[in-house]
Length: 574
Image (tube, rainbow, N blue to C red; front, side):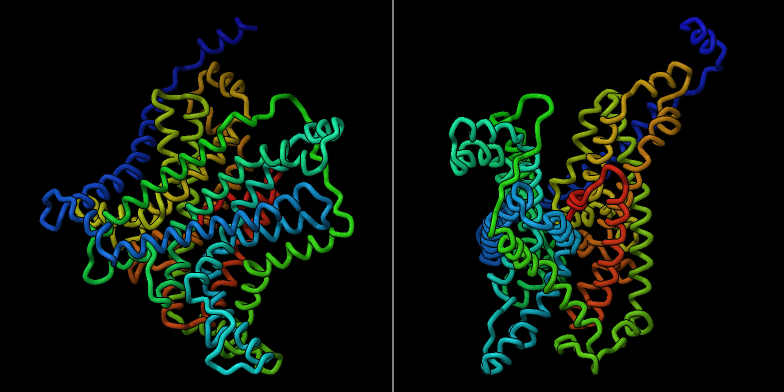
């Protein structure tokens, strides 16, 4: 047999192998995507308007109240949100994963709904619900109690209101980590504790909680990170309340007159803190102190709640009122009511807002066209780029593959607003003047979406043994031919899922786009933000509902692919 293979190889004409130059070309593209904007960010942070080296930018950042107050507000919001997320998500994760609470799968799906809801859209929905004067909940409160018009039960334009809304759309990260950790906890460990006389609380304290604690701590860090780097929710709620967070302050530094050097100085600490938190999360999740050693193990033992089953379900549904049921109802009400702050009835039902969005709002078609172009292009290029890089790192195809894998995951440590600043500084000067074109948004979206796409495809590569590729190489195929003809078809479902998730991520992205857009390159997320500033809440609701319908359609389609569950939505970046 080996003689036949040798003869076949000898007779096959030698193919020109361009694999290595192509792979190095992909590496160069990756370096340009990441290193170039971060380099300009560093340069601008330590120079003044004349180009001279200085540390005055950082001195102003940490000495003036105009910069110090947003830093303190950001820390308070992120810390409080992280605490509340853990307090709510950890018990919910335990109820869903380890008890016999009814319809636990439905609760997981509803948590996914809060995952795929853009946080800025959720903030606008809570404007409709809890604005002091026009909020629907405050109107109900005044109607029920007879309180005067100037009195309100909720004020979403406050520090507490921002913490509440941010927590609504960051708690799913903690929920997923805790629920997955509980799902993986071997039931035999708890059974052994019970056999040896351990009571339920003793077993939980000595067995279950130590196994889940790393995931809970990592979830707290992720929640802190998400709250710290959000732009949309603070911009919609904090600015009317009269204060800034770090992300909104960075954005304001690009308003006229622009101060790019101060924006760079403000963005750099946010970047460093993000890297530190992600490293801490990796260390916590990677610790070996509570690793489970062994082969197959039994499913976790479900705890019977008895008469508390239905109260537990009711508690979960009450929690989900805040990120899902109430905001969606408010958007639906505003979309079909003549005035967004009025209650919808059969008598005042109208399609005026839909007609306005489709036929009168000229920016809709442009924003939709730009979003579709950028979404499809980013998803296609990003999936191909992630596929090739995942192949290189999984198969160790070129020297330096570890560095390539590091660069592919590095953008996860770059907040969107920071990346937007870096790209603005990089591409508003020769030789690459891309500002004002869709190219700069394409680069931003590619950079943001690359880590999740790469990690998803790398995991898929690990499930495919390289023997088929080796056989192809023995018969004369190049690496690229083996990837195109052998491996890529086997990865078809993973590639399709990655493409869909990148497309959805582009639709949701606001932080980088708000720095980089112009009147001709506006996308749907920026259009919603602009409409909120002009008060067109009915139009926002129509566009937001359309965005949610498209997003859920894509997520449902992907979850029907074998190997993907509802947790897959957690790969989306907010």
